[in-house]
Image 1 (cartoon, rainbow, N blue to C red):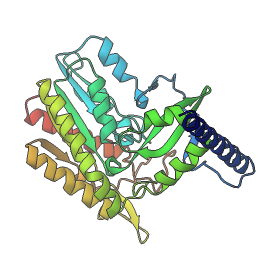
Image 2 (spheres, helix red, strand yellow):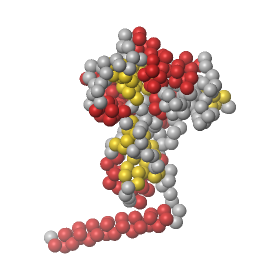
Image 3 (cartoon, rainbow, N blue to C red):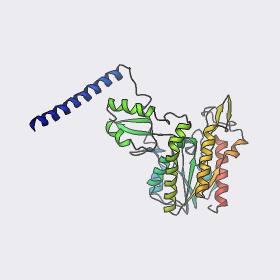
Image 4 (spheres, helix red, strand yellow):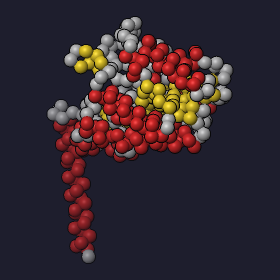
Length: 322
């Protein structure tokens, strides 16, 4: 029996020694620039104490309006708006949410913008789940990047590290939190992430096939939360303009897939859908684009946000909500 214990102890010692040597080996390779994890693990310079965002251990960046709606007084009609960089107002001074607030009676109705750039449907669901006050209306903006994996933020020795396209719903965050300092972990993790069909920001059939069931699941979860709070859900689809053969067009694969996906979901669940696609086709959205916005950027400019605000306002009036 003693010999068995000795063999077990020896085996454990050999395994531990193996991993120590492997860890040192990968560390030397990284310091020698033979291998790099820069495409997967990036130190971020986000100001987590800004007036717009704060850091949440589970989600990373979270809009500060989440704190406001959970602590401040509510209004007769409270409307929560979930989305990504489009709703967050990337490239414009006033997003469509700001414009809706200006179009409404602020003593009665208030739109709360909970969007953060880069969010997918899981993160929008997670933010809604964190709200402690019940909305009357939830507007969920849907966009092509709802199918893309999200980033994970972790605190490593006081430095905020962004793990790029980690996975869709942060299910690996506990693993990342505990092993982020290990070079062995970084090598293994980088391999699996880089072979995920949704790594990077280009969508394809494999990525859509991989994440569509997950997106559908989190859309259902959002519906369940909205129903449990006796609220009403409105879906908003903003099209993706993409350059093809030197021409910017909405007639592209990513846009068509995302549009049909959310159309089918809205019909299946009898949910109002405000689709901006046809309204954008008749306008030159490049006209009047802010100087700090990339000329080939796919985010709507101020004209685009005015169109979105007007269409949502018409839908809310039609539903006798405002």
